[in-house]
Image (tube, rainbow, N blue to C red; front, side):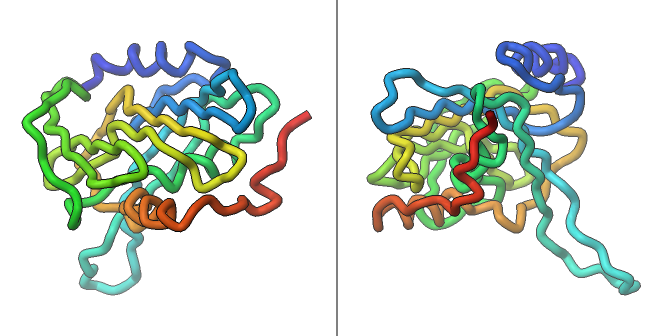
Length: 197
């Protein structure tokens, strides 16, 4: 997997970005705003984190966590806005009802990964098998919960993991978002709509 690191660096540097030299899943996000012909592009890192530990001698089996970081954002757009518009579309967990394997595989992280399909009328969503029963978002294309955004596309471009990730506490955010999309878009909190001068 270490041989993939230069590719991650190249992907992160294709737009104005902080260099990526660590582990994680790198996503390319394309956002089409309402009434705007130009597509905004960003890159996001999803870093799987270990489960929280306690002082108990015997540790219970707990869910892991994730941290999201914007490596590159559209000019004049705050990273918080990018995360507010894309974070709820991510997936890092085990299989769930409405998620089924396909015959397709893709090469990610130096391995062939099975692609899973998410049943959704509102969008196209596919997951990639990272091994150990863990699935991660591979491709999403569809509407956004933010009424200011007409279309969102997310693509997994790079996998660089030092260890097998655990299912994340927020790992099935995508499924919850797809359910909410059936109810129509909602306005983002005011703090998530702030842009940089």
